[in-house]
Length: 274
Length: 293
Image (tube, rainbow over all chains, first blue to last red; front, side, top):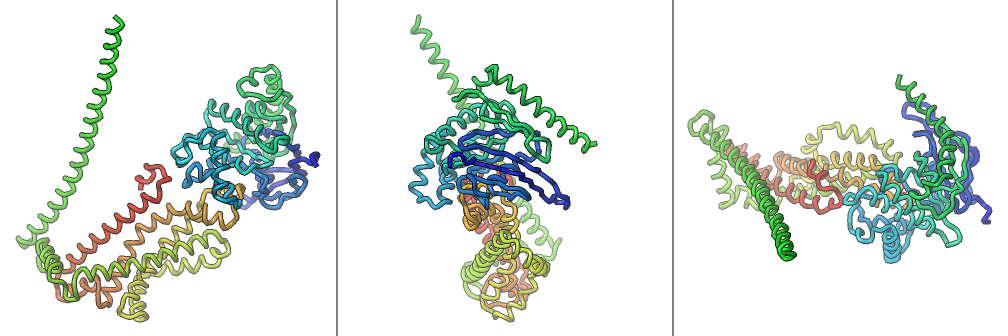
C-alpha cells in the first residue's frame, strides 16, 4: 500500500478552447509521479501550463487525454484528501480570520465547536492567534497568506497542491513563509507519513530550498523536461541552505536546463509582439 | 549630575507630546471649520434659490399662478399638517404611499435576487429565460400601471404591482451580474475546501453578490416610490400621488409642489436608513472602497 504513489499523471493532456474559438494546448503528454510524503517543486517558464497541471490533480479540471491518479484511484471530481493554496488571495473577504479557517471543516460537516477548536489550533501554529477577529483586508499580504495556509492545513490534506503561493510577497516575507511551510509540512499527517506536496513556482531558489525533487517543465505546452533530485539534508532553513556549496551546484545544473526554456518562451513573446 | 540629565530628558520628552497635541488640535479645528463651511454654503445655496424664486414670483417676473412660490407652498404644507387634506390626514396619505412602495420594493427585491442568483448560477435557466427577460425589460414598464389598475382595482394592490415591476429588473440584473462575476478563485477555493454546489451558492456567491445587490437597492427604492405614486396618480382613494392629481385638477400649483416636497423628504429619510444598514452589513470591506461610490 505504501508503495502506491500519491500522485500519478500518465500521458495527461489538457486543451482549452480560447474565447476566439481556437484550441490551446496547455499541457501535453505529461508523465509525473509523486511518492507519498514527497515534496516536489515544479519550475518552468511563465505561462507554460504549470498551474493547469495542479488543477488536473485537484480535480477542478479533467484531462482531455491521459489519466490522473491519486493513491491509485483515477481522479473524478474534487478529492477530499487534496488541499490547494492559490496564487491569488482566495480567502473569503466577508469572513473573519477564524471563520475563514473554520470554513473547510464546516463545509465538510464538522460541528461548529470542533471546527473552531481545530481552527484556533492552526491559527496558533501560523502565529495569528491574536488576529482571529480581523477581516482579511485588515491584514498584510503575508498574514493573509498564513490564513490561507491555515485554511488549507486545517483539513489535514494528504496531498498539498501549491500554485506559486508566495509569488506576491516581498523577498523577506517569502523566506519566512518558506521556513514556516517546511515546519508545518513536517507536522502534517499521522507522524510517520507527511503530506505529499506539489509546489509550483518560477523561483528556482525557492524550489531547491524546499523540495526533494525539482521538475523542470518545457516552454508551453508543458511537459516534463528533466527531473533533478535535491540531496540536501533536512531539516533545512531557507537562508542557511542557500549558502551550501551543493545548493549552488544544483542551482547551476537546473538553471542550465530551465534557462533554455525561459529563453524559448521569451523569444516567442518577442515574435508575437513584433 | 546624573539627576540633572534625567530631569533634562524628562522635560524634553514631555515637551514633544505637548507640541504634537497642539498640532493635532489645530488639524481637528481646521477639519471642523471646513465641515461648517460646507454646511453653511449648502444652506446658503438653498436660501438663495428659494429667495430668488419668491422674489421673482412677488415682482411678477414669473407667473405665481403657474409657478407658485415658496411661501404659498409652505402655507399649503402647513395647512395639510394642521387641518388634514381633502382625502384625510396627511400622515395617513404618507403612510399609504410608503406602505405600497415598501411592499412593492420588498417583493420586487426578493423576486429579483432569487431569480438573479438562480439564473446566474444555472446556465440552462439563463439560456432559456435570458431573451424573455430582455424583452420584458425593453417594455417601458410604467405603462403597465393602467393595466394593473384594471386588474387589481383602486386599492393598494395595483400600486404594489407597479412598484414590483419597476423594482424587479434593476435588482435582477445586478444580482445576475453579481452571481456571474464572483471571483473564480474564491469558488475554486471553496470547492477544494469541501463545499458542495449548494454551499458555494449560499456561502460564496450570495455574499460576493451582496455588493452588487446593494447598489441596486438604492436605485430601486426610488423606483418603488415612482411606481406607487404613478399608480396613485392614475387612480386611487388614498396616497400622495392622489394628492398631486387632486391639486392638479384644481389648478393648485402650490399643492403639487408641496406634495413633491413631502415626497422628497420621505425618500431622503429611507435612503438614509438604507445607507445605515449597508454600513452595518459591509463591515468586512475596506472603508475607502465604501466611500468611493
